[in-house]
Length: 292
Image (tube, rainbow, N blue to C red):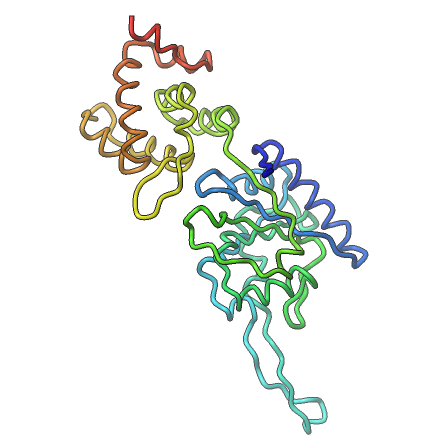
């Protein structure tokens, strides 16, 4: 039986995992590294950003989808020994170890920093070989991560049509896989209202929660918290000049035709009601009432 967590529980698990990593870093012991696993567009990366903002931690995001081998290995250089009679290879510090490029700044220099290896499901086997070294020894060649840095991975699942690369068994054996799913109530309360997602979209999804996340599709639009957010932003940009055919074009181009058709039907009824009042009550619209 597959167990997945909502975002609130994920926050607790990740916080505990990071705290444990930081503790064992001090005494040289090892622990598993959390991997947030779930469909695209549900907010895996954003939940890490929010944890860092709330805790005053730093955040360094490494995008594994576009990383080059040299960025994780560093570059070799021939170095002469002090007696100048022998030569050896010394590796430069890997670019991923650069902690000056932080997406979230820590509250002070002593605060923890999360290094998020995002889109880790796209790592090929060559990259995974170095990932094994990083997860096991917290180092690449002779360069070691500082003790105040904790590792977290995030990626999609094999069934998500997201270019998933099978994770090598020795790497997977060092990972704590945390499966997560989008929860509508938490998305509305924790994100949608705070970020001014359009009230009719919120109300629609409250009545049709199954439309929040659709089946991941290749080369076509499908619904996710991210695509609903983008749709809302694009609708806002048209202001009062938004025509019905434009609304359909925007929505279908973001969340797909099926969810859009349902939304248009709902929107025609929703227009009869005071959207602000419905949103303030934070309750789904009753279709029986709308049809009267």
